[in-house]
Amino acid sequence: MRAHAERLDGLGTTIFAEMSALAVATGSVNLGQGFPDQDGPDSLLEGAIAAIRSGANQYPPGRGIPALRQAIVDHQQRFYGLAYDPGTQVLVTTGATEAIAAALLAYVEPGDEVIALEPYYDSYAAGIAFAGGRRVPVTLRAPSYRLDLDELRAAVTPRTKVLLINSPHNPTGTVLTDEELRGICAVALEHDLVVITDEVYEHLVYDGTHRPLASYDGMADRTVSISSAGKTFAVTGWKIGWVTGSPEVVTAVNTAKQFLTYVSGAPFQPAVADALALGNDYYDGLRAGLRSRRDLLADGLGEFGFEVHRPAATYFITTDIRPLGYTDGIDFCRQLPERAGVVAIPHQVFYDNTEAGKPLVRWAFCKRPEVLQEALIRLQKL
Ligand SMILES: *Cc1c(COP(=O)(O)O)cnc(C)c1O
Image (cartoon, rainbow, N blue to C red; front, side, top):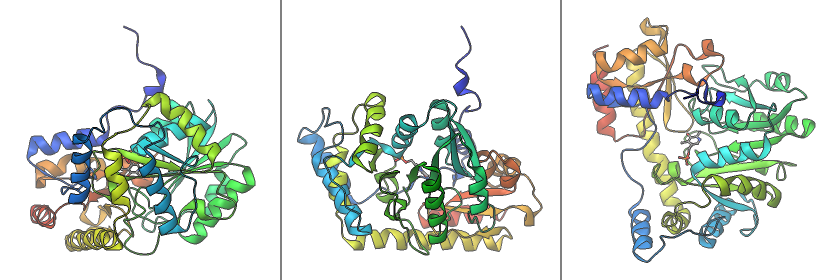
């Protein structure tokens, strides 16, 4: 048989598959993949069960059920003061992952350049490749991971079509500042670029605040805003995401989405609609619980001598491993399960400019405190 298409070159199997297999083989505590080990609120889980029992099991409307589209609109208004029309400006997708892929397919012509912040979330490279685009990195450099706006401006060429932004940012945990967001908007406006913004960690900000790119002047019509229920409600396996934007943007993304999956998770949609309307106590409690886990793991890793980059947001802490005498995060992470019974993820795999990520390792803290404690006990062996 002939070899597979070139667009798969370099995609291989994900680091998460390799590391999760190692975790199982060695009985390690898995702080690799970013999924919570406790499920979301009971009312949400019961909502999906009730929806299945009451017959929400066939194709829902392509853009999402009306109740969920309305709940997304209400959420954008409540948290950010952004107004959308539920009929034309919202699209429910199969997770943020599908939204990102569909947005790239909708806007990237073969040969177009997509500027993305590296380290990248791993599906970005694949999504850009599937669309025939070329990715152009702008590096967020440790330890502060600030965006260098001069570097961003220098990355723009006549072939640049899309800025793919992620804030709060995985894996660094950084939240773009107001100045950085303004800089991104200025570049987008000056060069007439589409901005695809992945904001799945919008509610997991511990220091500072999240401000959506779409809320900046002039951005409403050129921004594809993406979020998801997975992280906000601790149901990463449900894959209910959404896009908000102008009617033209939503129609374009839906044109691609309808032939990727057609529709998304019928019984999960009413459950997520109810969850989005939960009171501030839910959102505050989510943040407070994760903040204390962040601090538990960050303090512990710091005591071992790692240089800890305490994140302002997300599920992840990054450490520089050089103070412990290591230089290569990939080697370190491959040995860690055997040596200490813990799995973590090397940053390097999320960069084109691999040198910038070489000594950096990512640890997920979205786990029960006793699991984090156990990981710290095991790491004493290092
Ligand atoms: C988890 C994650 C996603 C994927 O979200 P789904 O809704 O599970 O598809 C997208 N972007 C980032 C940055 C993530 O961390």
